[in-house]
Image (cartoon, rainbow, N blue to C red):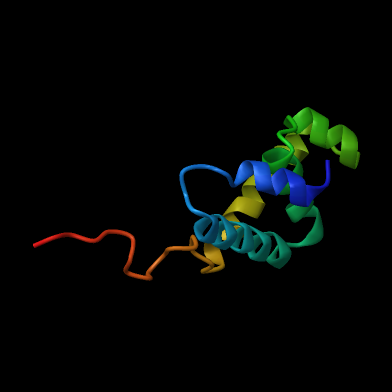
Length: 97
């Protein structure tokens, strides 16, 4: 299944199409900003649902090495300042009154 088709399935839910589009674009920005190997590990682990062992087989790494790369990638992504799509836009909650 092409990545774009998989993303459509993953980002469907109760959110509207605009929110799904923002989430997809945010995920693409984060993955594109990572070094290639880190981005590929996250794609396989989270978008394709592979286990660490399966990712290791696909990339010629041990499962332990995949887990280390995954943690580093997630830490790097968190430190990039590319917050979630609604982060800081002020329209997440509206209160009457």
